[in-house]
Amino acid sequence: MILDSFKLTGKVAVVTGCNTGLGQAIAIALAEAGCHVVGINRSAPDGTIDKMKEGGYRFLDLRADLLNQTQIPNLIKQAIDEFGRIDILVNNAGIIRREDAIDFAEQDWDDVMDVNAKTAFFMSQAVAKQLIKQGEGGKIINIASMLSFQGGIRVPSYTASKSALMGLTRAMANEWAIHNINVNSIAPGYMETNNTAALREDAERNQAILARIPAQRWGKPVDVAGPCVFLASEAASYMHGYTIAVDGGWLAR
Ligand code: NAP
Image (cartoon, rainbow, N blue to C red; front, side, top):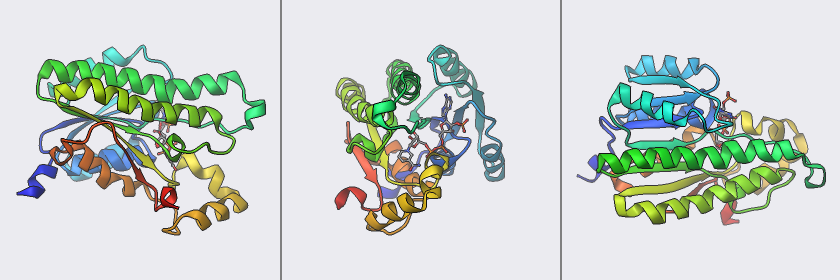
């Protein structure tokens, strides 16, 4: 039955930055689809833990600052010690810094590139090594952005990092498809999370954004949950290196 190929029963999914926003919706959706979830957060994921408990799902709460990559081997080890394997990685943790390109500071360049691109790459590398060792394939899903496709306004390091992430999605997919590892991305449009609070508080920008979205609303975190479950499932097994826009039609205009 086709719907069986969307089920994730007994799979182990690692989700970065799942205390809030898109990551929280993704972690809960993966659990609902059958996964045991490993959450990697720098802040306590209290709301996520409550929801996992309510649903009776297994959740391993790991803490790390993903601004650097030093803790990655230890995080992977802890996930395997708990669940014995990893099947799915969602590189969701991300930051944004806003400033005119003409005044943009080097620290704001480095921090954003480190979390959004460098850590996502080395997390993927570490998980891919484990997937290859297990010999049964797996799924890596990166959370990209409209700014993987477009230039954006006042967020040059964010645009650079998310454009890099779409390129890396293709590069990793090319090398690891032979191991039955599917690497793909989701590019969310304008979603209601902490990441976009400043835009929604700016009445002029808010209006300009809404006027350009064919669906005429901001996205909600749960809007990315279905596409993520799909990419994590056997139903997406012949998809490699693609970035799916979940954007209310933004890119279609
Ligand atoms: P968010 O609410 O700000 O969530 C970002 C997540 O990343 C939080 O869990 C955050 O933890 C975590 N994080 C940031 N820096 C970290 C670090 N150094 N170490 C560990 N965790 C860290 O924003 P969101 O919108 O849900 O963002 C999720 C992803 O979607 C990001 O990659 C973002 O770029 C992408 N995205 C968002 C939109 C949008 O419209 N919202 C659009 C396109 C793409 P803390 O809570 O501790 O900061």
